Length: 69
Image (cartoon, rainbow, N blue to C red):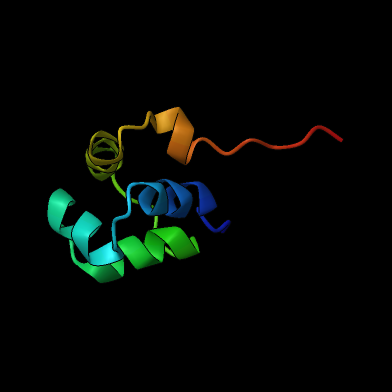
């Protein structure tokens, strides 16, 4: 799995800790950490909650762009 650096960057841009984002979205901090590390695929409901909290779209944070070969 790929690390979600876009999520980490968006969270940092809002000056939020993993714990603050977790509290705002109703999950534990370890869940946010696992998403950022690419070790956990969140539900669409959690993805939407994260996007609303960070003021981003699903495409901004969760769409994987693959480079063309």
